Length: 214
View 1 (tube, one colour):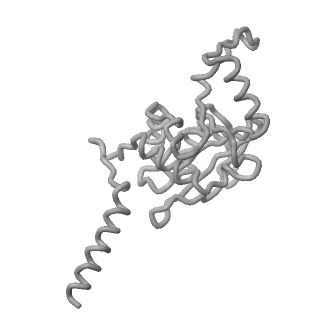
View 2: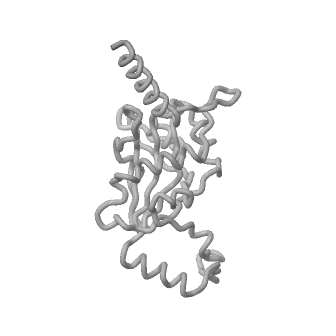
View 3: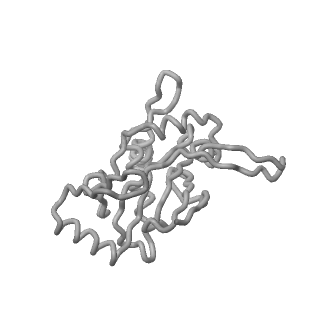
């Protein structure tokens, strides 16, 4: 009987170690967690497995990378009856309940992220910068540069007509790493911020965080 409990204890300990493997985080000299590209990609892999993002008409959507834009906007404080100008990064920090907005801003600046690296998980992903780009002068389109064959580009357009597209930003985390924010565009028509929270070591959708239409 003692041997049985010994094996049971070893089994439970191994499960605990397995569940905590991905939770090992390194910290910099300021005590800030170092968020690697793997950590960001693992987050996206998890939330896209059974996601409200890839559902309905967007179940088979082609995924593109979305850049978070740090613009300025007016925010109304209904309690104080005042209006303040805040940047999108400050608003994301508020959404994450993260008081240190510089921690959020540094993630915004960090380019260690390539959404194409979650492609082996069955997602159809393309980074537009590797396919084509438009060159503008003022508000006028003057040239389209294409980096693939015309047939390849046409096949992408045909797929988009049938299956639509979703653009997903890199995730932004709070300092305790129990909340995360991403921005999603649906076929470039409308979009929303998505707030996730980690509960029992699993990322779960918490709420929408603003929205926009084009």
